[in-house]
Image 1 (cartoon, one colour):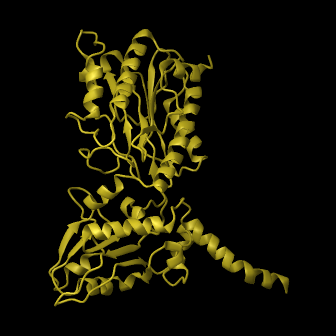
Image 2 (image 1 turned 45 degrees about the vertical axis):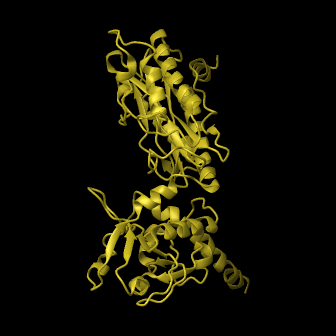
Image 3 (image 1 turned 135 degrees about the vertical axis):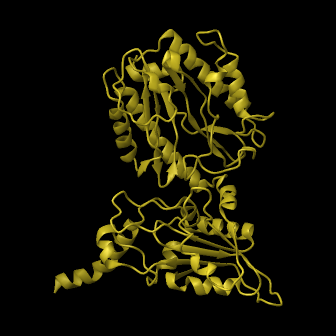
Length: 445
């Protein structure tokens, strides 16, 4: 009698464990996602419909949720959809409606779940509590709900409109609306979402800090492992192990470990060369924690000590980063490439006025990329670079000099937060950046 009784009590617990395992990422409180959905509905002043990507039957590379869908829901359920609609007053041709939000879940496929794991089904009575949505419905009800909300008039449907060579998980599922007699206007929701995502809330900042801290630990491990005759790929593999064991689910981007000439190649990611004494190696690598990305770069002398010329170039790059930090003003500074408040211009002017190449020319020509970018659910998070950097902004400052003729590439990249008081916080500040501190961390002396 004991065995069946035990199974009776353990079955609900097992189901709960399986459901939670299906979405093992850290989630913020449901109220945070609800607030984002309300904010988007107000911006759109209409109906927003977004779809999550489908999961392949044999998802051998793992499923990653689409960024905007995760931002609004915190859910990793593939093939789901969300609908939000702002409150509307009554009109002659349509009744008033309250703010509306509905999560649509596909029916469970028990055969596929043997391959991909258990999913949250729409029939689960706890689904609203688990997800934080006001209503949870079966996917088949989405057409009727959309038709009800857009009845009367020529409403706009805000969705993930694919542009250029991009793809969108929302294109095919919304095809049914295009086949109706309704005169619909499909508008892109992405600009509004980019605006909302530019400034992070406290929960997002907490997740970003975890991504940064795990990535800093990985860089410390690389400091100890970089030596002559070590393959670049060994360093990349070591770093992935270090941030993975601290909770990161994947790299934020393909790790870059470029030595010698390849230190001057910005997005070199083959990582197949053997490091040589006398060269430098640029290590641009970081992990992603619960979908939030870090982005950190350090340049190391492979034998543990910079040559005089390497140290000269390194100190100029570090000086440019420090000049940009010193020039920062909350609510004024921006990531644009020009203008009175451009941090890029500050860094470029520093580089161009310090040091020369082998031909006596200024070094500004070797600073060939922007100074930084936003961080968040994407390592290059969307956002308007002309908008001043204020509280809640998280971004990189990453000046660099790349001189192929000398086989010297130097990039120093750190992650920054503007706190609620407008102070610039260096999130990756625990990782040494001064040349002498880098050498000490590598050699212990």
